[in-house]
Length: 373
Image (cartoon, rainbow, N blue to C red; front, side, top):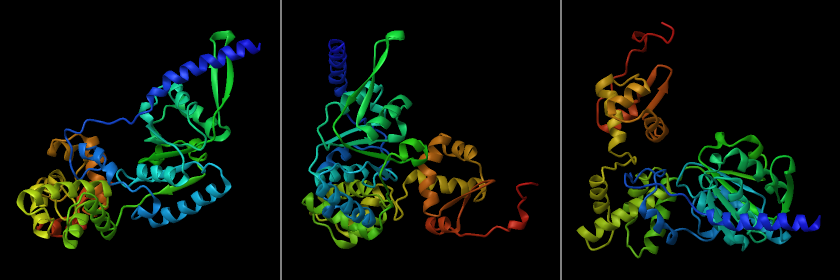
């Protein structure tokens, strides 16, 4: 019987070694990149490793998250235990991956990273977890995209630090429970509502990221400029911050482009004038809107009298898919208070008219038919 069990374990180990090669981060094509869209990867993002802080003291912004995490990490270190599993929620580009890596540095632990789409089969997860060292910080990006079978295996791994592995087939099949080292899972998602409740409840620490203030982004830009050996004026940094959609990833992209303009048109120093001209050439305005954002607003104003207009009709008018409109363009326009979603469609606000330099004429709501007319 022991011989059979050892054979099963050897079989599991061979599969695990083969599967361990699946540890990678999925990158999508970036040929159609928009600088201000943090959800779309850029070739420049791969160079951001040098700009990423390594310790909590270097991480700018997200003050409450930093303070809480500092306490949890210090307590875990004093107890010489792995940190509780950590769940990070927030829009793309706000620093979830960076904070996960900082957590590993602060704990003095190994850091392994993958993304949910890279985990295709349970053996992929088994291969990773069976080869980690004790205390490892294991980061899964886009965790809301985990397949059900992998998620079920992850439940036991998170709670009991064991893996259930099925050996054999049919009537001869049996389950072998394999112990694994204690680890800290860090899950990140931009869509918390798509993460199942059973998975959410297994995280001991849940932190939500907020968009950064202009002042915080300006500090991040100046820090990044120093690392890139680029001189920058304070007013130029603040203008870039206002154009970065509250997102450090976008701020660093804009900084790199302004550095190029400063090198080509000036002496390498990023001034307010260089920044103003550079943003104009990139068609990025002071709210971080790019060409297509303004086209959406102008289409509603010029073609539909400021709205209301349905999403499908609006998408056709600007030549974009409805999903693209709703997932990539509308959220930021709504966040800025430039459009409103109503039961009858999208409406451009007075703030949008003002931003575009157009005269706003309030509509007589009494002349509009009600939803039930």
